[in-house]
Length: 255
Image (cartoon, rainbow, N blue to C red):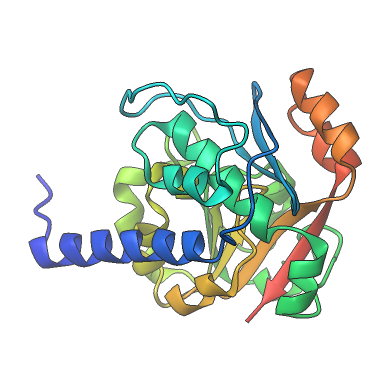
């Protein structure tokens, strides 16, 4: 049996509410939802700023069906990122990313780096203890150069369950966390467990906002949409990975 400190749990929930509140506050009041799409693998929301995306998730708490999303204030849809209904949370995250994840905003934050995937970090990872929350196929070669631990919500033969993350993350040099954890409301939990590590948030669901640096994140590795037409068509057709290669640009921002 694992006994959890009530004060720690309360602090984590407060931080989770705060981080979502700050992200939502960065969505301009004058934007509206021009279109949305819940695809097999990705959820898209388009506003006057452009298209934002997030992983499509199902499950969680079953909430009342959303109605009349098109034309809704973007900020209102963004509040659904806090929902326990994972599909609603996907829409909320995509709404936030519609406002934040575009080239102009990224350039306003800093001069973004656009390296070739994780090659940018390979020299740093060599000989270090590295953990990933989520499975990233492109990181498989890391096992040859570092002590790699993979943590998954649904673990496989060579990975650990999220239930034991607290026994792994405090002892890492680098921790890579999937942006999907924003939808599951577990991001803050993993960040706090990895407080001694350099933390990298990764994936198309990651909001490119400096707000996250105040919570202990060191690097944001997300995407901006560069070809909306190609992306929307690909998501309608059920594309999983190829749509990202053809219609988005990887962006790395470090604090």
